[in-house]
Image (cartoon, rainbow, N blue to C red; front, side):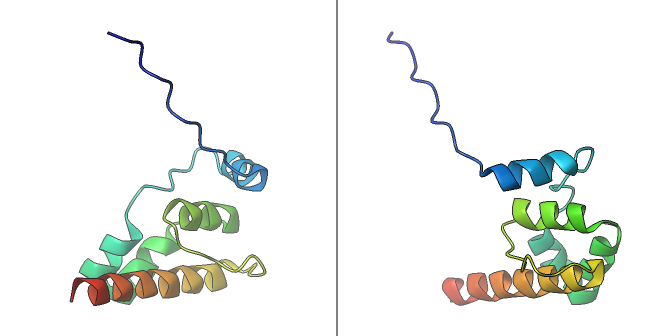
Length: 99
C-alpha cells in the first residue's frame, strides 16, 4: 500500500502559542464550558471558572474552548464574565440551529 501522507500542519499564531506556553501545567480542557452552562446554569459555570485563578489561564481556557474574549480585559472577574457571556451566546446559537 502507498505510504500515508503526513497530516497537514495547523499553523498556530505565535501570540497564541506563547500564551499557551506561559499557561503550562494548566489543562484548558479540564471541563467543557458549554456542558457546565447547560447542566448547571450561569452560576454553575461561574463557580467552575473561579477555580481558574490567573488571567493567563482564563485566556488559555477561553481560546481552547473557542470563546472570544476581548484582549483589553485585564481583571480575572471581567474575563470570567466575558467567558460566561460568550458561552451563553454559543449555547443560544446551538439551540436556535437545532430548532
